[in-house]
Image: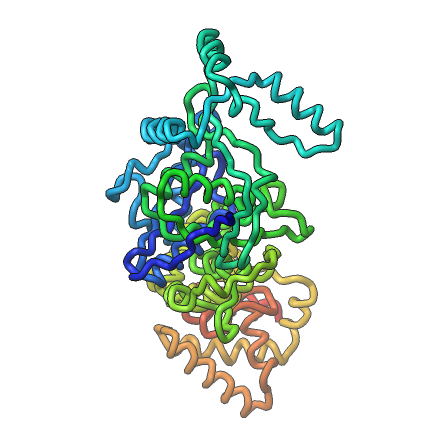
Length: 491
Ligand code: GLU
């Protein structure tokens, strides 16, 4: 007999139910965030349900702070869940609160002869394992306790040894149609009877995950490729427990720039680091989406709505993705350019304030507009905005020499005269003023760079920076005058 995973698509869209099931043993990192995103996109694209389940069966390693930070990061990324802690009808959504259910299911499996008590001690198992390795065999459980006689069983019970529970694997070939990897065959000969409940009564990952996916009516399991080897065990359990089998889609791994699996060892693998370092959630999910998925028409800068519309799990490739920070930075810049001045102003405000660069809303909006095209990350804003806040301007030797020249002095003087005459400078007025300045100087035979560079240098002390009209309109009139005078005094 060949078991084939039951991969029928649910008949109506509203039956699509996917889940993201993080273990709160660390922060949300790039890989799990992408898994969450693909599940979320798949749910949104199919008008399905996105479930968040906290897999905290490992009591020692599961930490509340990690759970909170995972939830925070998901909310920052905008990956809102339809069901999860605090909402939904399939809860509780913490595995630690579902132990009674797991026990019930294990007992049922034992009663039906699909699982059995195993009394082997750790020492016994280790000896067996060592022997297998020495003999060049794969270290698999021998199945000893499966074959215990009634008499042996009752003797062991009398010794009051607490047994673990193992699933009795039928030796067979199992085929799975994975939405990304296509058909995969697993030889169950290679899978020994695996533990589903530990001697202390706690469920193993395999049991808990299948019971939950079954009970929560999960239609599609979209998860990292690192779980592929668990899939045959899970299919066996779905079958044994009488649950409808979900469709599987395993996503390829993400490699670091050194082509090893992206992990905590790599710089900035945690989402929170990007959040703190001035990346936008829009850019982050856009970038994560492109890790092994390709949008149609090769359009790479995509909004959240576009991602939802275009996402197709069948367009996810089998090849590993390579994490490329430069591309993420480029996308971040692109998403910054897409923000309105008002939105960008709100985003840069905290980093400016942290550097004591205080400004009202209008000024902030102008600054946002002035620096928008330069920014790669939000946290860089103070570097670019500094020019609007610095109190003192100093000139290096070269700038001093340039400003002392007659041509520069003439340009500054001419501009000063115009500037003095016009009292307020909104952006349009500033542009107009600079146009007049250029015309006036042209009549005196001074053109282009010679007309504008002296003003820029006088106002900022630097040869580059934001457009001059921003400087003229954002800097207070008095500051502009002082700086023009300071430069004129050099002459
Ligand atoms: N809790 C598992 C993990 O964090 C996910 C299990 C699954 O997706 O099936 O890797």
